[in-house]
Amino acid sequence: NLFLSNTTMASKSKKAKKFDRPKSNAQSPSSSSSSAWYYFLAFLPIPLLFLASQFLNATVSSPASDHGTGSMFDLIATRYDFINRALALNLDMSWRHRLVKEVVGAEGEIFTNKENNGETVRILDLATGTADVAILLGKAAARYKSTSSSSAVLGLDPSQNMLNVGITKVEQA
Image (cartoon, rainbow, N blue to C red; front, side):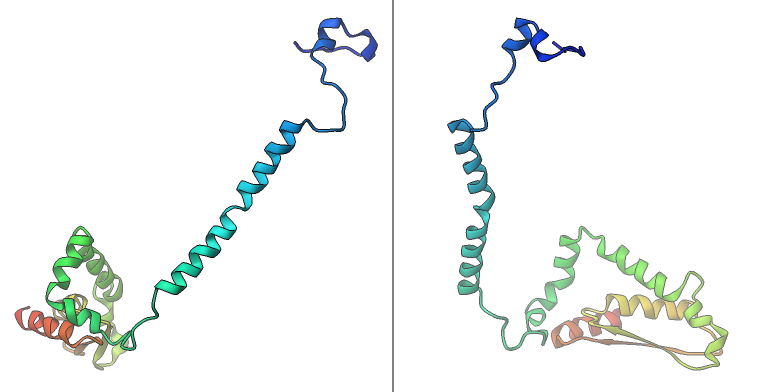
């Protein structure tokens, strides 16, 4: 029940007084122990995170000395395209086509730009892998070929086996 009145507390009915809480500054024993549990549970993750970080530092080794040389990709180069298509649900090719469209321009502006003054348009595909993007860029260059300028696409990769697969794909394209 809602008690609305501008009378004093003494004029409240006995029913209203029955629901009033006792005025006491001391907390009941059950509320102080429940607040202790809140503090315990709030700070529990800190030591657990510390122990987990110590465990990971002890069990996880630092990168191999050949980190960044492409040696991992050398091992999977012949299966890379299949694995990549499977893991990306074949969406990776649409991403690559979108990338080439953004680089080349909707009307092939990178190749047909008059400001090239007959100079070769050079495109670097860094970390080319099996050369999917380089092949698409080469096809776009052939599509928008201008008589006033030429184009070149260069693919670089630290993995020789990935490059070998890419070279085979370029020869077949």
